[in-house]
Amino acid sequence: LTPPNQLQIYRPLLRLVNSPDRCSGRVEILHDGQWGTVCDDEWDFKDAQVVCRAMDCGPPQAAKSDAFFGEGQGVIWLDDVNCLGNETSLIHCRRSSFGENNCGHGEDAGVICSDTAPGQSDL
Image 1: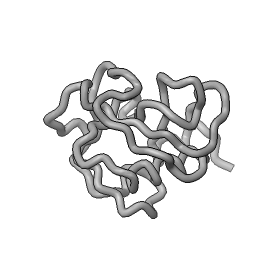
Image 2 (image 1 turned 120 degrees about the vertical axis):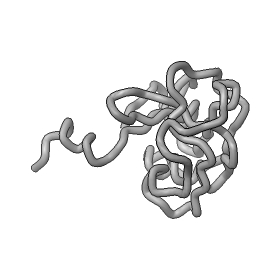
Image 3 (image 1 turned 60 degrees about the horizontal axis):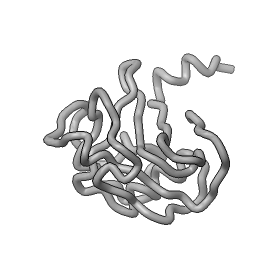
Image 4 (image 1 turned 90 degrees about the vertical axis):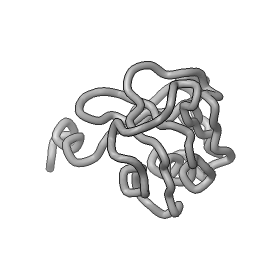
């Protein structure tokens, strides 16, 4: 059995923040030990589908743009995310390279998934 901290090497962590429940919020991804946001260019329901599935939060209700859940800070890791909807992670979707974007935090992407559970959770 591989200890959880070693799994992070292979699978970037995802979290939803700035929301009262763990199944909605601004999408943030951990890359190179640093949390960063996802730009809303090309952000749509299929992208939200991948996030909600990865977070074990049921089907998506909405893909949110324009920093609906508030502006993040620090690096913007992903831009031009274009998922088919069946991927297991955002990094498997067509997208820009990590850190390559033409965005500001006013364009941070978010999701609202159908399941709700109090509290924030990192997966």
